[in-house]
Picture: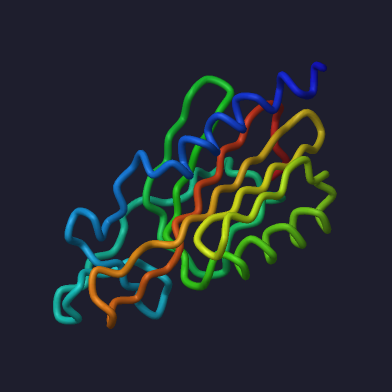
Length: 162
């Protein structure tokens, strides 16, 4: 019962993330592309735009992130941190890679949901901490646009190892 109550906030966040409450960059008229370093760039190659955000220095080293991504947002609340990334690849591959890496690092999977090829949610627990991943495919504004995947990571509880 206690574990179910602890997962409720994670499930509510997952539902919110998957419901499309936050418009995709394409909905705002901004196609998403990545440069060779994995940074998001503007739609036109001659006007690159890179993110100035960096992962916090205390971001846990045992939380898997995609190999190539651009950090979109970082939100800190008491006991909770949420980061949103724009990653190359597809939802199925990114969620599978995350699942394998987290389990290899000692995290226990508590939830795995695949919603077609466009969305997936994973939840894990380890040492009094929880990690929720939501993967959502960006929709291209034009057929030639790179779409990528929005990966939202919510971390809660306990001190994290470096």
